[in-house]
Amino acid sequence: MTLTSNIFLLAFAVLFFAGCEESTQPNEYSNQLVVSAFLTAEQPIDSVFVGRTGNLLEYYSPRNCAITNAIVKITLVDTVNPAFNVTYTLIHDSNYPGRYYSSSVVLPLRTYLLSVEAPGYLLVTGKTTVPDTFSIVNRSDFPDTVTYDPMMPSYKLNWTSSRNYSDYIGSVASIDSMAADIPSDFRTADDPKPDKISIFYFNSPNINSVSIIWLAVNYYGRNLVTIDAVDYNYYDFLRQFIVSGGTELRQIRYNIVGGLGVFGALARAHNSIIIFVKP
Image (cartoon, rainbow, N blue to C red; front, side):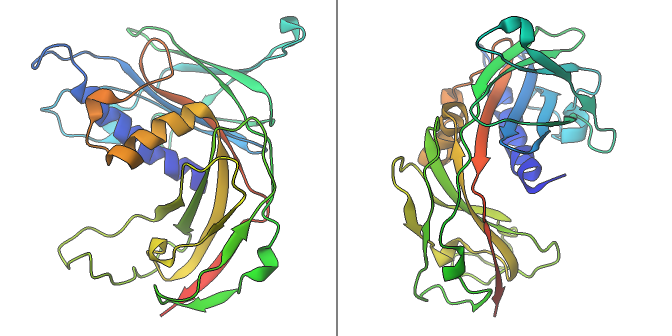
């Protein structure tokens, strides 16, 4: 799976736990579909995950809660003539239960519809419009290799404007599977490993530059530095966890009908930057 697929697997786990919490009575369990579906401009459809809610007493596992027999469809909308809509039926990935994908490439500035059917569950539907593509314009300003120092001078990232987006989100992602994590005064030896992906920039629309925060780099080795232009669905979902710290699960807002979850879209900047970080 791609890097964006792994990002949205985390979102799927968050949605599962949110579904566990959202019952009308303290001991009431509501079995519903949980859908985490994201489209990335100019990339194949590869980040759609379908599962179910679980009661609070069962051990959580994406595999245990995956729905493997769903009919998942993504429809490309023709706003001029709906008769020319194109529907893609996604394939279930047997290596990653609950994941559905298609080789069809997502087009920027186009609207897509989601449909998920599974025996014993309500029909789940959703709608999103993909932001336009854009580019980082000063890639050459960044070195190929840096020696890690959280107090080192920052580098400013500049990019062109997207369209039809809600916000920009900047992130750093470790792309070396065996990379060592960077020691931190904020963690102890008993703490879990830091996240492979960390956000260093959020909630600033109409601004096309930002300084990289080196404290956002959690691992030595190769790190991908990039900016995403996200649609409102993804922005509204993500900001609930960044602003509130993910503690107010009962306040989660979903943008799909018939289940729990989110159907969103993003465009990742062209010319994303890879920096090798050494001790």
